[in-house]
Length: 414
Image (tube, rainbow, N blue to C red; front, side, top):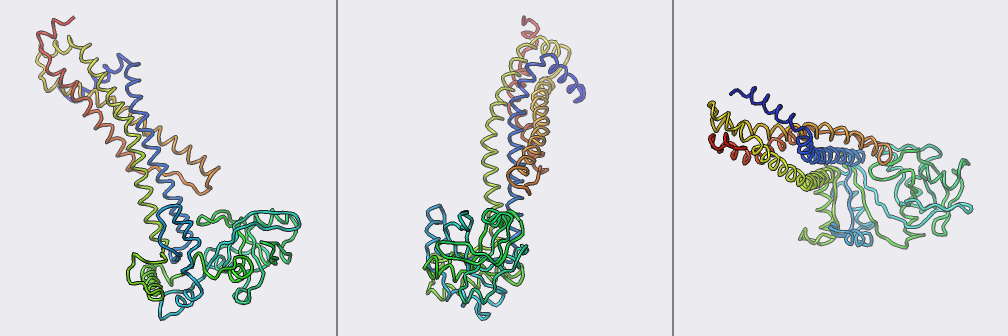
């Protein structure tokens, strides 16, 4: 009997018990839909995060104090580590130590709020160079100007505000030239960033930047930095520059064993690779958990096919009596099982794509405006492959039972 004829018979068998076939298909459909959504949203999250990291620029290298954190407590400890100071910045700025470093800028974090004439707002306050953000992240100034390197050296009390900070403190009135208060210290507003939103995980609209020297001297009372950013001359020399940074700091700190480093270096390229690995692992894990639903659906397919074998015992006997072989009987019932799972998988892929698109639209609207819909072709191949495999694995035993029926006993069956 031809495959075409077997498929026609399989469709007729499914149509006879539409409700039962639908419920059987439903188990496979739900599992495949969930897996498709996991893979699509995982790819969307990966594209979003990689895009955010890329907006930093591939030439940026971040240096943080303390050992590389492996948990929340390590991150908290790194904020108070004091291994990065002015001496380290000067060493990194020397071409003899780091020949491909184009720029080196230190940063500190300033806890607290900003206020103006009774209005108080809690932004992210950072001590560093506002011009660094303008030049390297493409965030222009809407009003006023950035403070200069001379302002940093002279510890001037000046500040550049994000767009939202300006709105919260000053409303529609002018802010440039006026003074805000941070920790009882007055800072003159010299510039306002354009409305930009989130850039590389920083909400620039909620940022206040003051000179790090002023922050250390007048607010924090410290002489160390939470981060030093180095701009390499090009993306091609990032890894070489990172190696030069590590060598220079180890020599300065008298460290011979890399495992005892009191700093850690992160490149944007390396961060992107780590993020991709983490998301891929997480997506695979979640998909494997959801795949349990497919096992349940497969058991349902096996159960329904065993019932079908029992109900069609006389049909099996009749077909064997007119010359059908065990192989053909097994092929027929196995084809019906695969057809059930294949239909469920196909509908699940389509439904998963539609739901993923709708969820992506919602995320782009309410969570991240640059979240994009992504439905990898590999997900479609995986979905169809898995459904076919489930049909074969869970349909094999019922098909074998059908093929082993004796034609005489089958014809006598009532």
